[in-house]
Length: 441
Ligand SMILES: Nc1ncnc2c1ncn2[C@@H]1O[C@H](COP(=O)(O)OP(=O)(O)O)[C@@H](O)[C@H]1O
Ligand SMILES: [Mg+2]
Image (cartoon, rainbow, N blue to C red; front, side):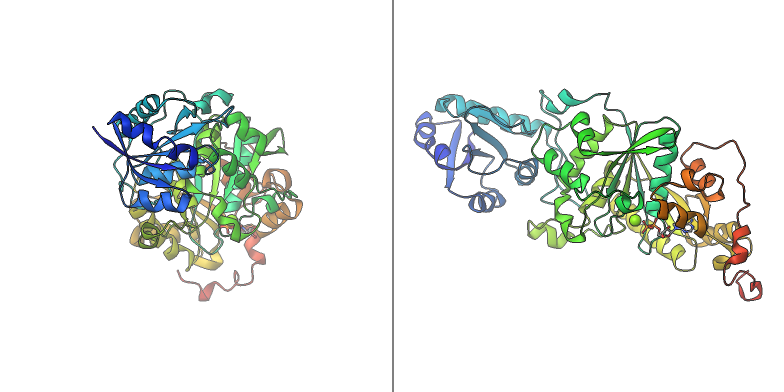
């Protein structure tokens, strides 16, 4: 096997004569001075490995993934102590002789070929975001882990229009935490992050962006992730929170490849990780295949792909129902592995009819996908507003509310005592609730 390689940076280029003298197993096909030159050469499929000089470029997991997508493995020359290892990158001391370097290149390419998954197997495959190859034998992530990496990941997702994804995510997380489960709550909404504000966190640090930045450098585990999360006291328990981006234009900081690593680390930090996803999962494939532009929806897609379970939240009204039907069809298309549990929120007679659950079930049987509805969460404006105002979860401000009970049940933490108010009682105060003649039956 003769392996075509590209070199980047002076120290790597200096190896070229030595490698050529070996007459195999590597052939230098291009010497590059700068990263864009290297990227362009890799995109053409010219090479199988890139030998990169120390300091020629910042080595990150995203860069490794980008090159891996083009079928190129990185062999990094190192001088002195180096930063934590990045998966899939082969490291060689810059003092090594050309034969040692050539051996390292062969090894790296062999390992790459043995571990790489078929490219394009994901409908939304992105040059920036190839699924990770099998971990290398020395998996640095585990050095930092403080518990087995068996935590579960649950994505809370749903269409546009504020159906209540954040409300459901926060309150499920709070119920689980109060019941003694270790929980990490992650805000991965790239359009309207709001967990920090909803929990009254004066946190300008965008915990998730920070975690992504560190994960991108490699060597990231549960304990390191724990240090970037904020800890929030919730009645009888503690909830770890990774806040979202502070401005919508910071979305490129949530690189799917790095986010995937954060979620992997989350498995060894918490028993359950609940991720509040953005609504939009459009793939924009044509655009992203031709360019190396990151995609705004990549974060939601990566979360949905990584999740062990998905809660799909829809608004229980004439707009929310068809939106959820459409969104679920899109989800089935783009992330076929996801098996969502359908949840209707803000369930109220005023919007769908006198017996809203029956009404919604009938509509769902007619128009919705085969999977049934998992939960109906009643509207409770007073309870939702009170929790928001206090910057906490319903179990603190409205522990007896039907909404809190319904979410607790959805989280698998049913509460023994009965709700104080019966669902619907508050509806007497809703503007149109008395006007039943005009409501659809
Ligand atoms: N069951 C409910 N009853 C009343 N208000 C609700 C309910 N669920 C959510 N809300 C309110 O609706 C608004 C949008 O909810 P949010 O959870 O932020 O939606 P999303 O995350 O889907 O955009 C918030 O003001 C929230 O307090
Ligand atoms: Mg939200």
